[in-house]
Image 1: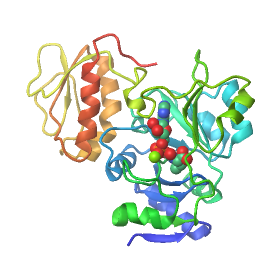
Image 2: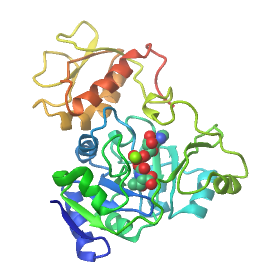
Image 3: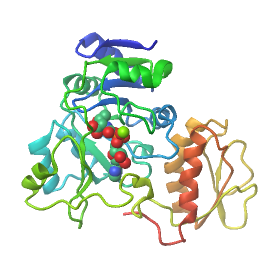
Length: 321
Ligand code: TXA
Ligand code: MG
């Protein structure tokens, strides 16, 4: 059995912050649903989330902030977003905004996108843990991929068993439904990416404009055209390096002038943690990237899914928004 402690207990909150600080996961209640939280600035901790959720691809995660000031440090909150934050934070609204370049949020949190999903939860225990840790939390809903969202500590235990070392128990979640997600990006009309805890009409009333409804593919932002894709051409399953290619290695590398290794020891969690930042770095260095094979198991399935998508892009067309 994982350790289950009362969410309102300051000692339990300190303990949770300690677990997160050492790179491990904590499940905790928010007003919407239980979240499976990691330090958002620790790429390996974030990789653990994908691993334990069993996601076959990297779906970007929501960054939970202690207050609007912290949110502003990680995303460019424009006037429209400010108005929504003022009205609905803390609360069940998530705002997708351009990611600030100086933000220390791990690339894996946004699955390589240059946007970030931000929210300030209306849950004192969650905010206390964020404050104690001193860093925001990346947290998807605390259920395994494709399963029903957890709204009680018992649900979380059922989902993950021993997989999560500490669960904070705050009873049933008040709202029991995930946050509404609104994208506020430069030069774009506001878009509703997911209906949720705040009714769309209430958001529209504050914005003074209608929200564009979710469209095809929105459930999987990893597939959107705006998803970060390298402008370099990728050659997958590479066992050698050709003239002019940079190498994205996995395991013991072959000789190359420009090489970054996802994990010399062949560790998939480390590889996931490095994937997007290494891709970005090599993309700056070279127009062609050879990618060594990554085993199709565990987190390797998500890594390969992302690599295949990146390889499908025609050179030059990518670059993201
Ligand atoms: O109420 C909630 O939002 C809960 C609690 C724990 O905060 N969290 C939650 O997380 O529902 P999750 O991972 O189950 O759903 C997050 C959604 C995903 O559909 C993801 O695609 C979207 O947010 N998302 C995250 N970052 C995004 C981004 N940069 N652009 C577009 N969509 C994004
Ligand atoms: Mg979910």
